[in-house]
Image (tube, rainbow, N blue to C red; front, side):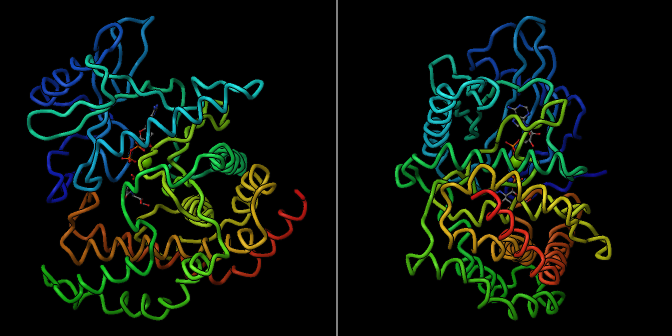
Length: 391
Ligand code: ADP
Ligand code: GN1
Ligand code: MG
């Protein structure tokens, strides 16, 4: 399949799982030479299915030396990469410290480890302006774009819940806002309205149905922001990108490590719960074209919720527990709004793989909002019952 690179983030023409072409391979090896790696580089392979960075798995030529994960950080999305890297150092250090005190925990596998450059920096800034970083590759792990079993869902819930628990004593105001107003729905709606007004590539006429859908729910979707403003929901250190494929599971499907720490910053717990549920309960793809396939798998919902509350119930306030269900509808709504905005804007933000990809993503997310609305009471009851059970 041809990959249509986004306008600002061109150069992603490699195919997943394939070795990179000669020219790219040379470039990547040149970048890797700036890092303090052990052993040597055997191969560099495009890896993962994230929408933002370019990620490569680096196989070591020495069997006793570790494999690595190389990323070109998207500096159009993260405008201040040095500050972003400071956040990641702070967060991984905090997690490592906490895990060291927990019997049976394995900090080296349960936290991402940055590999420094030869100059002992956390990233390499190349002459073309790209930012690169290297992590230890966590061997024998995988991430799931689609959740298959309640066991996986439960493990994912535990991993994201535990992540919040371990960071509960990291003062969120110590972290930089890597993307200001990231989950601020009022801001996202403003950006959508601006894109509609500008209509830079003439796509607005095509999306009136979607715009109507957004309009109808705009007010209701600001509930969590309002509760926050009224002081009823505490700001915590949250992950903010708890897509299910941002947790690595081991070969027994046990959750090992929460990854993709770029958006760890102050937020509400409902955001993390909501984004994880968005990508757990829907067994169709995030960009499913056949909307009739988008459903809520209740067993996956229940399993994720159990894992999540097992780790978090002890410190969540009653208002926070009550905010989880609204979060479940809010996050796919926000994603739909963001995909739709990017579509109208001419696809500048997300990587797309065909011309109407962002529109298809938006439609799938809005359908997910609808099916979650239909299940609202049942989901809310499950959250309450689970929370009671863990009291
Ligand atoms: P993006 O922001 O583009 O989603 P991620 O940091 O999530 O980038 O990385 C993309 C994918 O690479 C992940 O979904 C995961 O499969 C894989 N990955 C990332 N970090 C590691 C790691 N340290 N070890 C093994 N796999 C990893
Ligand atoms: C992006 O990086 P990745 O693919 O895990 C996006 C998230 C969206 C997600 C939708 C920094 O996440 O906010 O939820 O795509 N990350 C950023 O799939 O915008
Ligand atoms: Mg990711």
